Image (cartoon, rainbow, N blue to C red; front, side, top):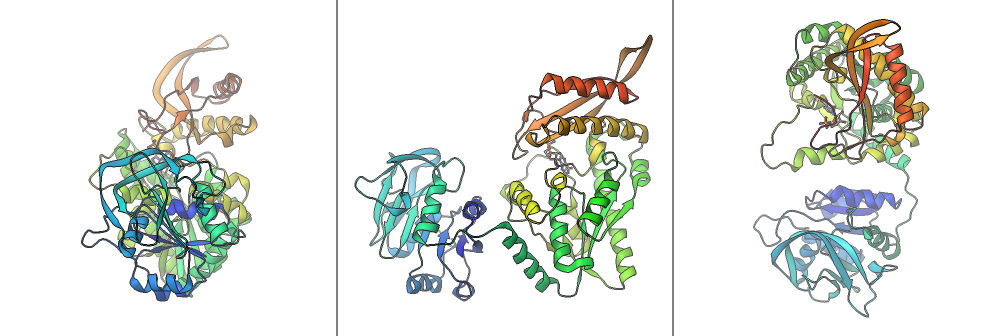
Length: 519
Ligand code: XMP
């Protein structure tokens, strides 16, 4: 395996992702990992990640001398990235100093003339790379020679062939370094000799083994929504411990048309998940009566969800006569970075509802099989697990559901109107082949009525808006350029088939300054 030692950079998981893309098996460890732990594995190479510290600062993290000894004894190739390179300089007698200016952004890296470092094999003489650092190397460590430079720094890449060590000041793992993957491939495959035979099913098998050890003969509970993340997590868990995993779907009365029924079918019949559905629609809708403020709706749904889930957990425990000690969550890597990257209080734009609020009240140990993965990798894993394509390619759906897509008061009647319109729009997106090209698509029911004419009569009905966005990270998004003919079909079907809507609009706002949802 390739071991990545994490010094706390936001990009550490991206390194892992790039290595996995090469079909090379890798694992992420804390930079403080012991030699004893590493020795248990067949180590082909080590990558030292970047990190926010300065190597000379008191308390800054360092690889233990025993690990360095292990590296030297086994002559394991090492690639240090940013802080990782500075760590090498710190250990092998180089010098690191604060740069005159912080370098952040694209930079042109030039290879040193006449020097053919193997990490740059197959690459041009100069290429664009992403820099993000304050400190820089001012003297190369003993036995190391510079192999690339920028206008601003003399030593942006160094190597020591005898020790099989390479250091890079820039970040080859980010997408802004277009040829960065070549460097990672050169290092892992050509230099370290890693085999390119790792596949997503290996990830699944490893998780299943680990979780069996962790859970023993205990029980695990988890909330599922039927979205790709919770489906993949639930299927993995079922493969690991079968019916000792208890999945709960809470029907809050604000799900899409026939959603609870369809999810039950897909999860239970197609995937064998031990899933129960709690019909709490009336309870949620009663509490939402008269509420129009978006944040209040979110709060009500969030707290009620926790109550319902907790009650169901108690029921399950009673039925089994045993306790559930673990909670399964479908947290993805982007959720992890988002939640740790904020250093100070940040403005609440929207209170996101998800099951993240559960552990504090329930004292359960968390199991998060997708914590290291990105959305597209979760989809790949879903396909590898044989989950049906409809589940794997579903757009995300927010926890508060249609309640935040019905502007103004949420009533049973309005939910029904929106469900019908939404189902038609999604059906038309599938039919026209646009569904998969879109990040998220839905209908919003507006608290506005407009005049129309149907047959010979006047109508005075609701206005709805279709929202389709293109996005990969959901942090920024552009409205999807849906062809007019598809819009036309949607509009005539919704207006003709859904009683209560007589006008359909298309939302052409991007995020920012708008958000994806309307509330
Ligand atoms: P916004 O509207 O903030 O949405 O641009 C970004 C993404 O987050 C989803 N979203 C939620 N997901 N609970 C969720 O699980 C929530 O409370 C919630 N609010 C928004 C939204 O659908 C989009 O994918």
